[in-house]
Amino acid sequence: MRQAPNIIVTGTPGVGKTTHSESLAERTGLRHISVNQIVKDEKCHEGWSDEYQSLIVDEDKLLDAIEGDVKAGGCIVDWHACDLFPRSWIDLVVVLRVDSSTLFDRLTARNYAETKLQENLDSEIMEVLLQEARDAFDDNIVIELTSNTSDEMESNVDRLEAWVKQWKLDNAS
Ligand code: DAT
Image 1 (tube, helix red, strand yellow):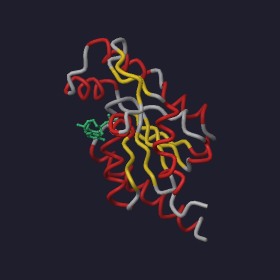
Image 2 (tube, helix red, strand yellow):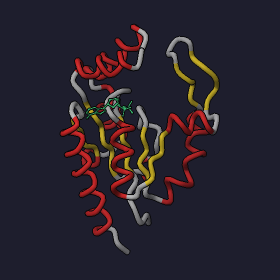
Image 3 (cartoon, rainbow, N blue to C red):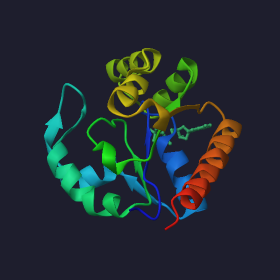
Image 4 (tube, protein in one colour):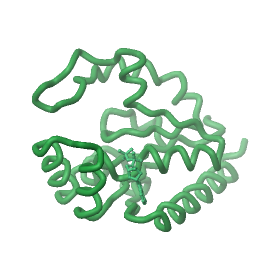
């Protein structure tokens, strides 16, 4: 049994996964696992895709790389995909959402190329990652939070911190 919960923070690039995960890790002592960073550091990829302008992730290698940490509990897994993680590993899935205009501004600030920017805006509008999370995990562990403003982020992190505290009380051995 885990002594601390595992949380996935997911959503379209630019919604605020890293910012939320770092803040929540600081407040709770949970460990932020930036999957992007692990893919690069542990070379869990099969090279670069020109079409998607991103690394082609080797999912088996990635799961092997994080399995030990995640099974021990207390991890915040920050990535734009969630359906590859075994259900038994995960206690809560947080799907962050933003308005299109906000996402446009954030991805433009990151110098995203036109096609990649449009694909991500479409993905957010079509709720692709929310649907993916609902298909992959029980509905009662998937929550959708908006991340347009700093105030919203603050209240999201407050809420998640309270959830972690309650999980620990409920699961104390
Ligand atoms: P992601 O990890 O999902 O790609 P991020 O955490 O790097 O996103 O955030 C992208 C940018 O948007 C970054 O400059 C911080 C800013 N940001 C994120 N969430 C925000 C929020 N709720 N309010 C204001 N700015 C936010």
